[in-house]
Every structure is written in C-alpha cells, then in structure tokens.
Amino acid sequence: MPAFPGAEGFGKYATGGRGGAVIYVTTMDDHSSPGSLRYAVALTGARIVLFKVSGTIKLKSALKITNGNLTIAGQTAPGDGICIRDYPVEVSADNVVIRFIRFRMGDETQQENDALWGRNHKNILIDHCSVSWSTDECSSFYDNENFTMQWCIVSESLRNSVHGKGAHGYGGIWGGKNASFHHNLLAGHDSRNPRFCGSRYSNNAAAELVDFRNNVIYNWGSNTTYGAEGGNYNMVNNYYKAGPATSSSSKFRILQPYADDGTNSQKAGIYGKFYVSGNYVSGSSAVSNDNWQGVSLHSSFGSYAAGVTKNDIKAETAFLFATVTTHDAPVAYENVLAYAGTSLKRDTVDRRIIHDTRTGTATFMTGGNGSSNGIIDTQSAVGGWPELKSADAPLDTDADGMPDTWEDAKGLNKNSASDAQLKTVDGEYPNVEVYINSLVSGIIENQNKGGVITFASGLTKSKNQAELFYNHSSGELNIHHENAIENVQIYSLTGSVMKAIHGGGSKQLKIRLGELPDGIYLVRIQDEQNKVFSAKVVK
Picture (cartoon, rainbow, N blue to C red):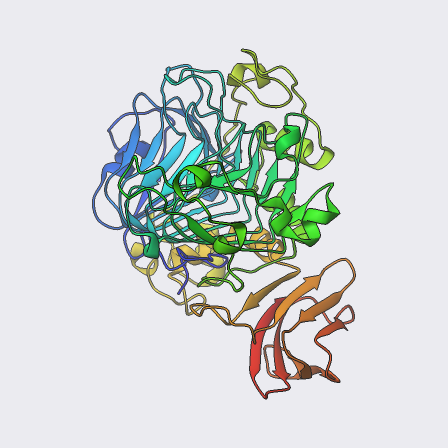
C-alpha cells in the first residue's frame, strides 16, 4: 500500500509513522520540550507528527532526524502552514515521510549547508515541500535507497553568500539506488539543476538507478543537469525553460555528463548511461524533437574516458522504473506550476517563483551581492521570510489526530483514541491517515489529470511496449508502439468497455476521450504479435 494516495516512484511504499503515536506540535518555539517539532522528531518509535499551529520555526541549531518510522504532515497545520528557517534539516534515518513543509534556511546564522538533505538511508518520501535559500545546494538527496522527491519546489539557492568555496547557488545533488525525482520545479539556481551524484562515493555503478521525469527547470545560470559519473538514468518528459540568467552556452542543454576523475571512491573513467526521451526545451524545436542534440559530453571524457562518444552513453530503452503518473512535458509544466510545493496554501515566495516561471521573468533582478537576473545572494534581496498566520485548530477531544467533527461525520468515537489506527472509514488506510490525506485530496486528484500510469512497474522497458500520453487540452489519447497495433480497448474501472478501436496495423493512434467523464480508465493494447500492453489513463 502506498504511503498515501498520490505517493509514487521508488519511495512510494515508505510507511513513515503508520501505526504509531500521534504527536501534536503546539508551538513554533524551538526547544526539546513537549509541543515542539524538535521534541517530536527526537522521540523513538513510530509516530505521526501533526500541527495545531502555523507559523515559522526559527531553529536554534540543525534539526537532524535520527529516529525513523516518522511522518511529518504539514498539511494539518491550521492557517498558512509551516516554515523552518535558520538551520538545515537533515534526514538521517530510514522510513521517513515529509509532506507540505517549507524549508527556507537563509543566511542569518551563517550556516554553510543545504536547507533539506539526506544520504545513506532508505525508504524516504518528500512530497509537496518548498525548499529555498540554502548556502550550499538547496536540497541534496543521494546514495539513498528507495527514495522519492515529488511535487516539490526547489528554488533560489544563495549564490554569493557564506560558502567557504565562494559562489555557489546550486539546486541539488541527486541520485541513489532506486531514486525517483518527479514533478518538481527547480528555479533560480546557477547550476546543479540537479547534479547527478553518480557512484563517486558508493563505487557501485550497477546499483545507481535514477528516474528523473516530469520536472520543470527554469532560469538556470551556467548549467542545467550534469555529472552522473556512473549509474543508469531515465530523463523523461522534463520541461526546460531558460530565463534571464541563463547563459547562451547552456540555453538549450538538457544534460552534460561527466566521466569520473578518480578523486573519490571509484576509479577514473567511470560514466553513466542515459535514456533521454520526451524532454521539451522551450525555444528549441530541434532539441525538443531530438533530445540528444541537447546532450554534450564534458571535457572530463577527453581526460579520463578518451574515445567515448554519445552513442556509448545512450540507452535505447528505459531502465527499470517504479510507477509514476507520467505526462507529456507541456502538460507536466502546467500541472507542476499549479500544484507543486506547499500548494495547499502557497506563500508569497512560491507564488512569485511560479509567476516568474510562467512569464519567463525575474521579479527581482538584483541578487544582493553581485548576482542578478533572478539568481540571488541573500533572502533579504527578495523580501525575506513572509509572515505565516495561524488559525484555531479543530477540536480533537481524544487527541487521536482526527477532529471531533470529522469523527462524528464518519461514525467514529471522538472520546476514544483507539479508533485512529482502525481501517473502518475506507478499509485501506488507518482512519487517522484517511483524515490527514483528505486535507489535500483535491490537489492529489487534480495534479495527475492528463497522465498515464503504466502497469510495467518493476520491469525494464522493452521495445514491444507502447508509449501513451493523454493530451488534456485536445482530449486525445496518443499511442505510439514499436509494432503495428491491432486492437485497443478502453475500460472503466468497473469493467465496462467504453471504447473499442481497430488499429488497422498503424503504429500510432489518436483516440478521442473527450466525451468520457473525468476519471481513471484502463487501456488494453494488442499488437500484431498478439502481445498485450496495459496502462491506466487519468482523464
């Protein structure tokens, strides 16, 4: 069972605090006493952290999550939600789920760090978070196992700030063994959008497997995505949009792979392999139509992997990937701008980032310490932390995580916490999780519209599989197949045949679904070799 409805990718089965104690955060003060976020994080055992207040937590020191089996559900905060500032937050434990939290570190405490990061752990899921104003990378997750970062906004790392090496302004170092990064927005970073870590530290290129799809990258400075010294990578249906800060040399670049120089844990000359498909580069129909025109080998290949060409790093079929509702790149662009980040109630920072991305502009052209064109050096250059107002939390008499009014409506006992972990409401998730998930159910339902969910999860893509994309604006389901298509049937979830189409031997079909009600449909495709491919379409 997924962590929550809408959890996808390799980290989707993280359980977090399922079955554990409900812990309420009741203060924005940072201390180790009951009621604080730091106290809740430091506890051991499975726990679900909910909020009775909204506002900004001014950390007094780094917040390190060392005890796993933890869910932090920021969507439960009444009012404007939660922001964490001043010090980094590190995920240093297994089985952690974090949703709808802002991590905006800033430079006031002179920390040289990421705002949110973690490595060398497993079963981690970061969902609908907003991360900004770091002094190193904004958010780095690599060398983890079974990891997902989805529907997050990662923006405005600080370039000329406090880092000892000088100018930074980097989005993140991403990677891992079975790691999914999908439907995220990276905006306003000079470089590392992201940097793929590769197997530089693990020395295990065969285990490095990253699925990078449906992300939006806007207004990078000197570089987009690079690195990947070892490992296998899917780069599918991402949307690249240059901005005012983008250099002319990288304006139409999708990827710049590196060959390892041998200075870390593996020998020199190791490089990654890439399946690159369906990416859209705004302003370049040539690169959008042929993504490999947007791939340029770094000079490290000449130094450490002489003779290697783009053909040597190119994969013709996708690597193993976990199920992700996949949109074509322009639809992903619209959905990410509509729903990514702490979108239950966006603050002025995220609203500005979304506005700039959509309009191709930078609201603040001066970064504060020499940077410009939407690349910033200090959060004060863009107005600093916005005020997040709180509101009255709903009454929860038995402190089981479910408001009294909700328990009354669902026929539960508001005077007994024993029903929180029962599955009487929907028969699938514990009752307290049903409530938590219901707070953002509209976002989850809408963000996946126009996408396709393949049943091929856990399988290496082969040439006889079909590719499907639903064009939400035209109402057409587009099917592309290596083989001639004989028949297509479209079923409702109740098993009714909604459409039956004879393929006529074509390898490409467009099927109008506009007249069908919104919902999830099953698509069954039979090709000329009598092989069958199935998928779900979210209309």
